[in-house]
Amino acid sequence: ATPARQDFIRQIVREDLASGKHAAVRTRFPPEPNGYLHIGHAKAICLDFGIAAEFDGRCNLRFDDTNPEKEDLEFVRAIEDDVRWLGFEWAELRHASDYFDVYYRAAQKLIEQGDAFVCDLTPEQIREYRGTLIEPGRNSPFRDRGVDENLDLFQRMRAGEFADGTRTLRAKIDMSSGNMNLRDPALYRIKQVTHQNTGDAWPIYPMYDFAHALGDSIEGITHSLCTLEFEDHRPLYDWVVDRVDLAGNPDLLASLTERGLPVVAAKPRQIEFSRLNINYTVMSKRKLTQLVGEGLVDGWDDPRMYTLQGLRRRGYTPASLRLLVDRVGISKQNSVIDFSVLEGALRDDLDARAPRRMAVVNPLKLVLTNLPDGHAETLSFPNHPKDEAQGVREVPFSRQLWIEHDDFAEVPPKGWKRLIPGGEVRLRGAGIVRCDEVIKDESGAIVELRGTLDPESRPGMEGANRKIKGTIHWVSAAHAVETEVRLYDRLFVVEKPDDESTGKTYRDHLNPESKRSVTGYVEPAAATAAPEQSFQFERLGYFVADRVDHTAAKPVFNRSVTLRDTWAA
Ligand code: ATP
Ligand code: MG
Ligand code: MG
Image 1 (cartoon, helix red, strand yellow):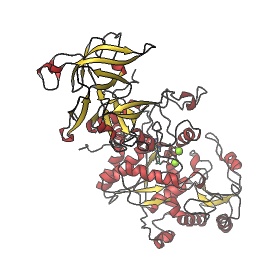
Image 2 (cartoon, protein in one colour; image 1 turned 90 degrees about the horizontal axis):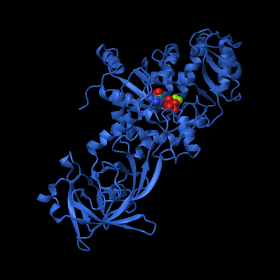
Image 3 (cartoon, protein in one colour; image 1 turned 90 degrees about the vertical axis):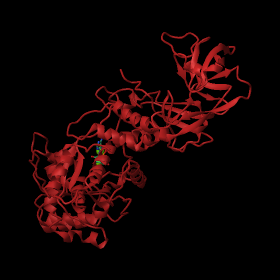
Image 4 (tube, helix red, strand yellow; image 1 turned 60 degrees about the vertical axis):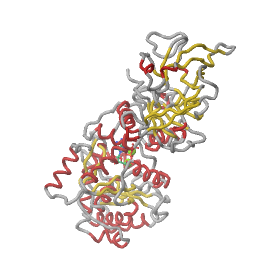
């Protein structure tokens, strides 16, 4: 069992439940469906859904779909798929667009209260008026418009009378605030854009801060967890929650009750935590989108991508990502996690669970000349050395084997423990072989080895116990299944691929060796794997049957991670 997680957010939740401030915890995960989720989102998902699960609460999945031009149903589907894959289920599926009517009425209320006004400044003028960190902003000349004029103009914005960018609805807060977010921020902008859910019903769309604060209130979110960059937005978040006061104005929610959407207006509290950053990766949706768009990778689910779809195809398991998030922890401290922590989480998960198989990725033929032609037997191997419950498998063994080319050296380097001419090595689970002969082609390349299997060294025999320095893996050439093996490595060769201070971009740091495809051989019990099944290929690493391309007749395995960190200094 996992020990109870201790972090400052869970501490707050515990206290709020103990004090009776909230009877139950409600959280939400609010992605914008404008791209695929990345590994950073896994942290937010594990936190939002995890806290709800641990404290018997509820977590909604809410699509923050307020920017229609960049959003797409393709992303919506993938996000749902990713959340479920990580092992979570939402209490309710909501969209910011479900609430467009509430937002509109809330905005009208703000106008009536004198808390919002329609501004005719152009985007450029608005920027000019906003001031800077050291210089206060100036009030818009439209700030003192009367309530009736504002209501009329806002209604005409909504009716589609005005062109994009010609007007905004702005909150009336404080143009000299030290917090730029409070300098009369926009609440609505005009966008004559078709929306994936609401079609052409709305030519105006709410801004994130406004929509997010109200969405949380509508859903009765108690703890609204988000990343640190929203810390400066919290005063605006609280301003919107307080000024609109949905709890005190249930009539604003009429459109939702009519549609049968259960409504709980509560006062949500925003709490920020630090983002997950991992070196050797890029993680923003914008850059991931560029990698795909510019053909630098083979799509969103390219196994080298740091999208959840990519990691999944690479062989990352939900448990390994949850383990990563647990190991990284939750705090307000920004930090960059070493890539080895991500890989370590996968190794630890798969070491405990993944069945073992033998596979050869750089094949060299080894003929055991003292076995008769057509000799065939099956050897029994445990599926997992530390987990008897996984049972055993039968591995065919015969006269001709494939071994790893790298396990033979004509002129061995110092400390070599594997096969050399005239030397002996142990064939995993089969016996001890001596190399008698090295066959070469005209160019001098080694094409085959011939050797003798010591008949007294078969498994279980006394002679099997004699001391031999190395053990190598093998597959029976007659029985092994030819396999495409995709040897993936990190996509970037530098720790900070998106550091542009050197005048370079992440495109300049792509690892040319990040994908190599070779033809290898696997034992039959690996070929019949279901897509997405993970194995340890002994001595090679952890591999997964490719989610898309793998079939038993034409196996395709992706290297998820090597057995050891080969990047460590
Ligand atoms: P990005 O800017 O990285 O493309 P985003 O923040 O625009 O991502 P959203 O769809 O708005 O993406 O994110 C949904 C939720 O996931 C937000 O609450 C956000 O704070 C959180 N999130 C995004 N990136 C990370 C990260 N690297 N670590 C932790 N949480 C993250
Ligand atoms: Mg966002
Ligand atoms: Mg972003």
